[in-house]
Length: 103
Image 1 (spheres, helix red, strand yellow):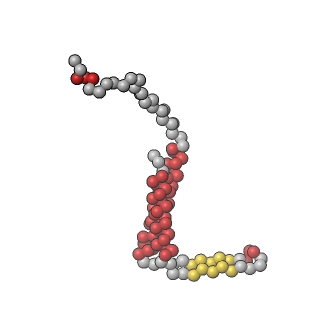
Image 2 (spheres, one colour):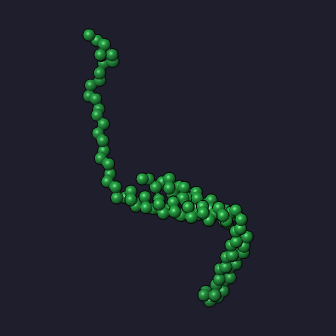
Image 3 (spheres, helix red, strand yellow):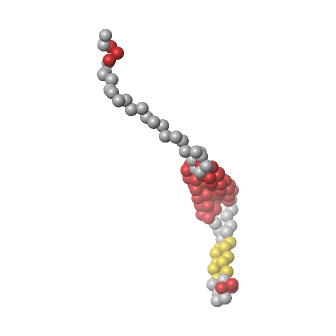
């Protein structure tokens, strides 16, 4: 099983969910830098209400689940045996066209 399509869909779902959640966000963000580095603070207040919150969270969860399945598929594909190469039979002598009609 190839994990290419799973990764593509996972990224699309996560991007759509994050776009809905952060696109309709009503909140504040603050960054306070202070001299003892331990006093530096980052405060993020995110509030999304309505339909974007109802659609965004499940889309991000589905994207995360697909990303997990893609990881499992990628790991499983590493342990498969390579298929043996098939030899193509190359004719050594060309047959004459319409040879079956000669008597």
